[in-house]
Length: 434
Image (cartoon, rainbow, N blue to C red; front, side, top):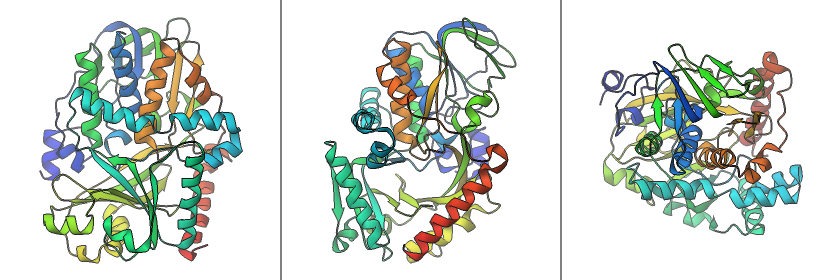
């Protein structure tokens, strides 16, 4: 499907390979009435839909309001990598928050990936699920960092990671750029838009109602919360705010503590199946160890999907392929002349701590945002935990809500330049190998 065909056949989505190959292209209606529900959810990405499915399975009457389309934001645009854990390793988490919280978070760290697999099996979701992640190291220092991370996981009983020696790299990726790495056999990759669409359809089959093009423009949080759109409103017993990097200014107290950050992805033309299998023989997805990292994988139709780059504040470069293609060619010189069929970007939400921001604005108003680049698995976990809190089981929610949520130094005015300066420094260290 061409880019123009994507715009016509699946309107409202980014012009991505995901939108072109979505199993479900139906446009849900917008909210045109006043409704009551047990739970109203703002945002139909992974967090909101995970919560909607969790609650619908328990018999709750759920309404989801989405400003654009299901999976419009990061949930339908990301690299599709099932990476276990969080954006900070367990040793760092223990040093910050203490051993007990680290233990509790470690127990949950693989639940998001397991939940994805369970739902794919339970509801028959066709999202090209594959198993395994290869983390690639450019330097001996990065290999030592992988060894430290592996040891930290194992100290909490989390096994399944293996260090990859130089002579074994070719089992996972045929590139001369790397000196070693680590695999996680419990990771994997999926078609993220088809995953969230499949989960949304499962929630709808259980009675949930999902409204697209229904942006919440005002929230009333007193008593029974009310979410107001341009053409309707929903009054509910509970309200879950799950807008993440696309929340805008609906709740300034949330958005001032996170920053939208864009990442860019492109998809090649379909390659000779023998070539793509030679480049990525195990069909594991790959993520390198640099601060501004590259990530890539095979697709079901033999394309290479390659992502990287970063735009603090959610700014997109004028030429996406000019940012990503040089790295792809350095990784795989064989692809210097291949055609790029799709290129897109999407925003994730970054926090100062690089840990999700979870809490409540009232006794019956909960939120979760800021997965900081580890959203595929963490959003599924936290959506489930929001559902648990609604059902009166807030023990795990309270662990997350107790983590400090810090403002960006310099506030909104300086958060982008200061964060970009820090990223430049760490990127320089990567280039120098220090």
